Image (cartoon, rainbow, N blue to C red):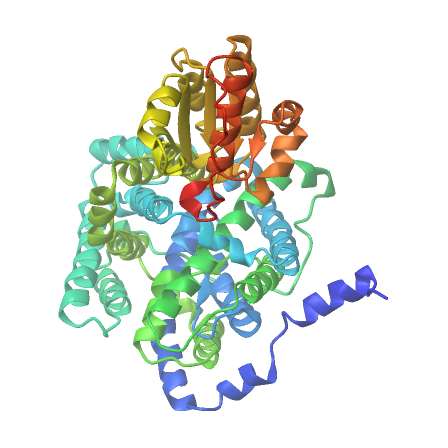
Length: 580
């Protein structure tokens, strides 16, 4: 007796929960993991603050996300090395949601997205990440980097963020405001922080120059009373108590579409980040469904503490791996260190200039762009280059979710086009399938009335009509034999096109025979009536020699060929693929 639906669901959920092996792994090398977690926390602090400010919910929202989501995703996720928190990609999606629905709308979207991610995990949807083409990933990474950089322009120029949710429009208005009232102090701090991070990363990759640059910028701003640098402002000491006060049941319907977009992005970026972590190590393999489950729980809980939706963070995960992390303890330590900072150092953090955080994110945007990967994609094929550029431009002009959807659709269309081009139909000689006696004379007579075509590759909607055109333009012959043993796949469109071609040739008085139809293709041909059309006249054969024998008999019966006094021995049935 099969298990009940609730039982199957519970078994699926139970398989997504942490195991004893996960807990045991955290005790193997705690010193190394604690040190890695401390390093990641130092790198993550300015990023959490910056992404919180960029999202529109404030620096405290970024810190709350890094602490709550960082801890839950680390413990319940499917990767031993993943570090989660607020990210630039998510910020890009959140800005228009904040503009349209406000803070409560963003928190509600995060809550719904968490439920969607948990549902995807239970449905075992994590494995479908492998079908996202590399040019789409590179394209939206490039687009995200451009958007993140443009989002920092107002703070880097020291002007108030203009109204609007289109990053290009906001950037242009910020530049106009700066031209009217220049703030060179903010520009200098932002460029200095970005330069220190970029140069320092090349000089000493293991040193967290982001926190060094931010501390230095804060000290300079305090010593010289650079009020034009615009400090973050007051931050609450500690996390707020969990609350559902932001929920507005009447707005849930309108927030469903943004929540689906946020969930899709969280799934995509988290699984991509976990895959990157696997590639940087030996012996590590993440569980995509558990990763979705961990991200779902993190996004379910983070809004309760005023945090924004979170994902796995590629940059912080890479730092975690490079500093020697081997278990979840490192990511948990990162969250704990940030929690200590939230509770003990909020007054100090509040003095960090917004221009300095803008510099951190400008440098982060630059470092997100892998020039070598983009160059390789552009040089690979024209289709890959087009998908990459289209995805990047769409990210910049519209938003990330539309960009991914458009990129996937275009990549799929181009892939279908490439597959369809592999299909071909060519005329072949049937001389090797004739009996040895009088083969040359027999071939000369039959060639006047019979043509044999071999179809190679897929016969499906993307290229089937080309075959219809080629078949219906066959010269005046009496019999057309189609060798179909090399047809790799056939769909309903291909079957209908084949049926249509047979009917058109029959109306011209040309008999169509087939050989080598595979068992797996018979159902689709039968469903549209194409197989009945051939069976009706007995024109379907197992092998090409049998089809030639049938064609010869047909020509003799119609008087086109004379009936010999003694029929030759029938051709031996050849079972190799070449005879079909």
